[in-house]
Every structure is written in C-alpha cells, then in structure tokens.
Image (cartoon, rainbow, N blue to C red; front, top):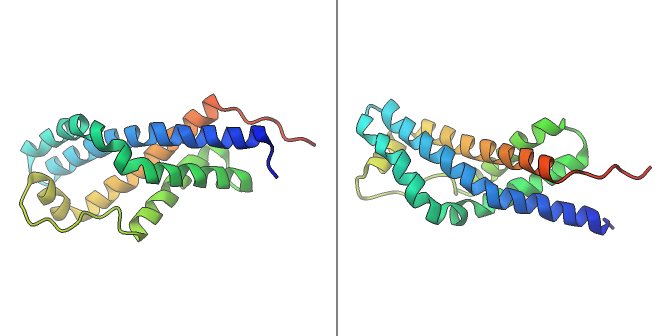
Length: 159
C-alpha cells in the first residue's frame, strides 16, 4: 500500500494538472483557432483568438477538466513504470489523453447546422483542427508535468 506522502504527492500532481491544464489548453486552442482561420484564407477570423480567450475562461475547466485528470493520472502511471525519461512524461501523457478523447469522440465538433466562422474554420480545415487539439493536449500536459515536477518534489525511494 502506498504511503501517505506518496498519495499526497499524487493528489498534488493531479491538482496541478486539473488547475493549470485547462487554462494552458485555452491559450493553445485560442491561438490555434485564430491561426487556422488565417491559414484557411479567412484573415478576418483572427478575431477568434481573443474571442476564445475572453469567453473561454468561463468554460475552460468544464471542457478540459476530464482530460486534465486523464493526463495527470497517465503521468503518474508513466512515472511509476520508470520506462520514460522524466522530460517525456508530460508530452506522452498528453498524447494518451488526446487518444482517449479522440476515441470517445470528445475531440470532434458535433455537426453544426448554422454557419459560423468557427464552424467553417473547423470543418474546412479538419486536419488542422485535429492538430490543434493534439497540441492542446500535449502542451497542457507538458506544462502541468513541468510545474508538478518543479513544485512537488519526489522523495528518494527507500532502499
């Protein structure tokens, strides 16, 4: 059975992922969607970035909480296996959370009957949207793991 300090450390790591991950993901998503609009030939779609930043603050945690939790748990499992270098645990846990989100259908937009700049950008550049979502997961998990490693030191293992 894990010690109390190990369980407390794990809870702190997950708390960091859950608090920081959705906010970092919001920034990456906002910049990515604005970039997709410009790359898709809609320079007026650059307004999507500040729009998502402003209104996304209200929804970042409701949209990203589950995936931050998944990435945090994946990071702890990957750390426990000791098969990866510590610097790779964050990105790999982001890939794990993105793979699970994609396989459950959470990454893809539901069909939209109304035409909005956001729907046009996401639909017309679907591969780019998938890349933005992968970046959201990987960068958020990497930031969470970096911060967790910085703030929550692991105690040396008993010999």
